[in-house]
Image 1 (cartoon, rainbow, N blue to C red):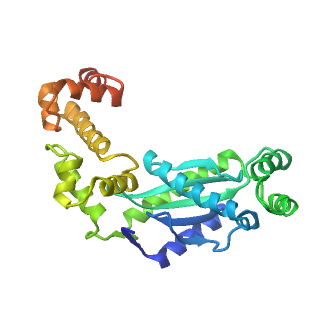
Image 2 (image 1 turned 90 degrees about the horizontal axis):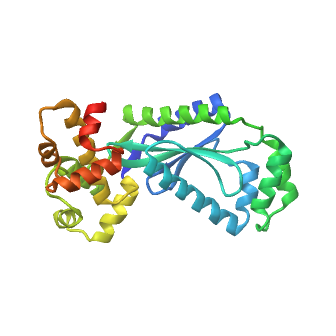
Image 3 (image 1 turned 45 degrees about the horizontal axis):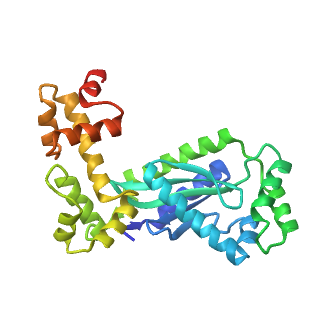
Length: 278
């Protein structure tokens, strides 16, 4: 874990979110380990699903997969879980590093109880659970509209931003992922790559790959390319007197044609057109 949470303040914030939305909210650290939740107890629906070994396993896989997708998107991700309830997850970032996740979930979002139960029954038919009890648990849950979920997701994102801005989450600067992120952020315009980073920190490519996947949701090379293109976009707009070749060089691209290719692939247009349009 590369972050430390002020759990007292965090629990107060989770309680406020629940009082406002009546939706359970959970905090995971960067390794997908649950740190806090409000209310602490899970719903009867989830208890029934998790009473089955395979159901419990699918819950864990579903949470981990949602965390990974949210990290790649750099924004909240709303989805239906493996058992048919709606959830939304927002990544917590400090700089470019994922330090945790906020998730609200177990929401029954269907046009009617009949339609919802039909889909949930099909999704859960292979679990060794009491289906009558599961149906009763469905009927206990209020029907939540898609608009309400969207609004709650926006609040979730605001809570995530608040956690970071107020420094309720503090990075442990000595941790390797943070050191790597700081190094890349300071040197991405230079001639660096996965091999040079591994050499710099005396680690193997496999370890670097795992750190990149956890921190950025993408590979190191792709992350460096993205940083370079973002800098190129800034230079194109703020320094129009620079030639395209000069912009490429200042952003760490030694091959002019490769820069044009990458820029067009990521932005949908060549550098000159981007500069002209914006």
